[in-house]
Length: 450
Image (cartoon, one colour):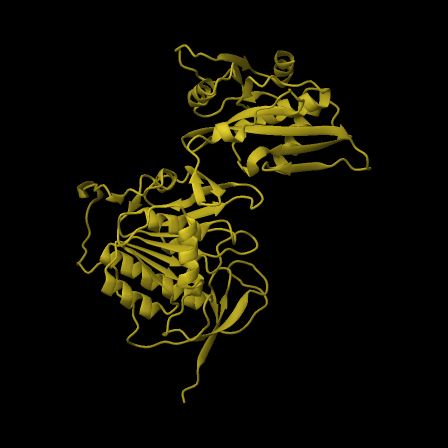
């Protein structure tokens, strides 16, 4: 019996080493090297995707061809993908356990009028059928289930079935017979992904892969997996809230700035067409510390409610706590308020929350955050008909934000009476039905607001 050849692979970046070392020299992580069996056969050589002979061509002579796309029944998914699913593309979707990845793809499989090949290495066919019965969707008679983890058997059945669309849940459960290591290791994930991508390109069939994530929120396995696929989607949200956000971290066929919003209900995932009306709660009485920010996710304007609570520090060190907002940016805004505007907030606790479990890094939230903090500090409520869009610099100036006209139009559509923006925004000369309050400094903003 021939001696098995082994090597050590980094579980973070996929680098290979002949012997174990404590730290990976490539990514710098500690204790991530795992021994795996390396099986090399002469016959196992992956051919290139394209069978046609290529030649050097000038870029001016290349004809731009629009990629054919498949429109899905989900408008939110179409928006994030850039208009639909591209034929032959491989899409990787990651997210925390129980967030709704399998539910999203099963709903897609049941609604699409295509032949779907749904492969599951984690659930039995009866479990998938129970979830499908719970989803109040149109039943697809051309949706075929296959519960298998062997890569060779999956590809054999796929070539025999000739589906229009393939879903694999999940890539970490697949195992190739050509690799001796266990499922989920770097070697297995790399080999299985390479064969699936080869199948997708050669047969022009779009493939969706579900990927597990680590405790740091990164997709488990080697980083090369994200480089190999065409689209990387991140499905996130707080399990204690109903809303789920679908973002594109990588998209070879469209923008990565778009966002899709879903609501988790008992019948599955429901698309949110107008998130602003749901995220803004109607109150019976005005309370201090509440403001409305007009943010932008890609080309989609959205209104978020910002809540702040400022109180005297009971303990020695004042607390700074954020939910859905960058804590470092909050500290910067508090320093600007104290230095430039003279507000004594250094000895007070400050708590900040974006309602609905939404997380965003749009700098246009700064003005609404400052308005909420000032409102809570002085215990003066802000009118529920006011909204804000502006970035704040270190010198206390209010900087312009991108696509101000689109933000103003959205606020006007939802019935707001006044919006605070920077006076440096280049606004069109057309008349708006909402009053535009242009401010330049925090001191000026405080006087206009209160």
